[in-house]
Amino acid sequence: MKSAFLLPFAAVALLAFPLMAQSASTEPVDKTGVQIQREQQNGIAYLSGGIGEDEAKAIQQATGYNLHMTFSVGAQGKFVPDVDVVIQDGGGQTVLTLKQAGPLVYVQLPPGKYTVIATRNGDERRNTTDVGSAGARNLVFSWSGSE
Image 1 (cartoon, one colour):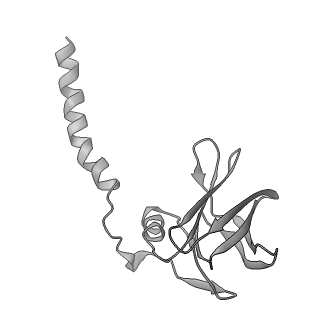
Image 2: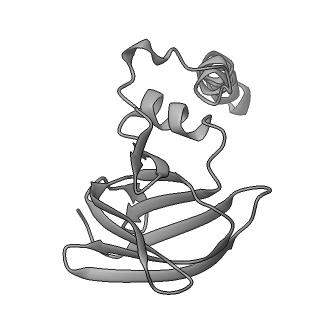
Image 3: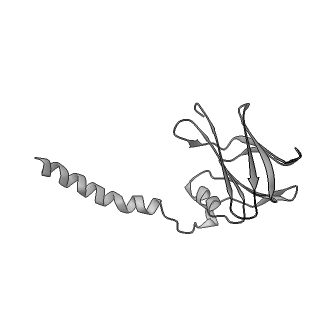
C-alpha cells in the first residue's frame, strides 16, 4: 500500500523539480520589460523598485551600490513598495529623501556612517550603518501587521 502512494508522490516531485530549479535561477534578467532606472538626488545614485520577480532580480543583480535596503510587512515578509526613506550622514545632514520607495532600494553612498529612517503609514524604523568602499551593507526594515 505504501508503494502505491510513494510512486505518484515521486512522480510529482520529479516533475516539479525542474520548475523549482528554474525559478531559483541566477540567469541574467531580460531587462527590456523591466522599468528600473538609475536615478540621482544630491549626487547620490540609487535604484528603487522590485515589484515582480523580474524587477526584483534586476535590482538584486545591479552592481556598484553599497547600501541595500529591503522593506517588508507581516510574518511572511511580504515586500512593500510604499516606504518613505530619509538617509542622513554622520553629521545629521539629509543626503537622500525618497517617497513611496521600495520594496528594494539600492544606494551608492560615499564611505561613512549613515542613519536610515524608513517610515510606513506613520510607523518609523531607524538603523545606523557604516558604509565602506568594499562590499555592500544590507538593511532590512520590517513592519508587523498586513498591508
